[in-house]
Amino acid sequence: MGEHAAMLERYIAAFNAGDTAGYAACYAPDVVLVNGAGQELAGPEAITRFYAGLRGQVARELVVEGVVEGENCIAAALRSTFEALADGVTVGSVVLDRGDRFHLRSMALYEIERGLFKRINATSLERTVVRRGEG
Image (tube, rainbow, N blue to C red; front, side, top):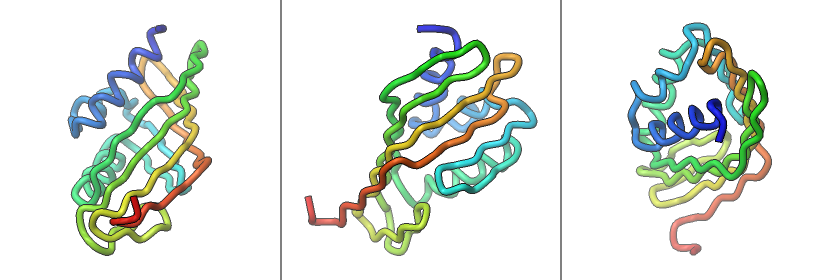
């Protein structure tokens, strides 16, 4: 595993643990994240505020399915599972009720500058909703 892939692994582990300081430490001061819904977030504070708000509404697990590492970037195949903690939670363009799960497969390009994520672009590939009680 290369240096950048190891950083991505630490980043994902901190993200899944809710360790805001841990995953924010991977961001450049002028980082820009474009999530799979096309929403652009500029700066570490905007990104961490967005995910802190989401964390209060859903339980999320992010899994890396594969990584291609370049000199100054990482391309990653990702799988996310969101489970609604309350009724009426919006994830992307989907409204979930408590216990509903939203599965998302995506690709993300992490551009790296001076050892930090400078730009993250995610693209959604597949979305599946499983309503509570459907299995």
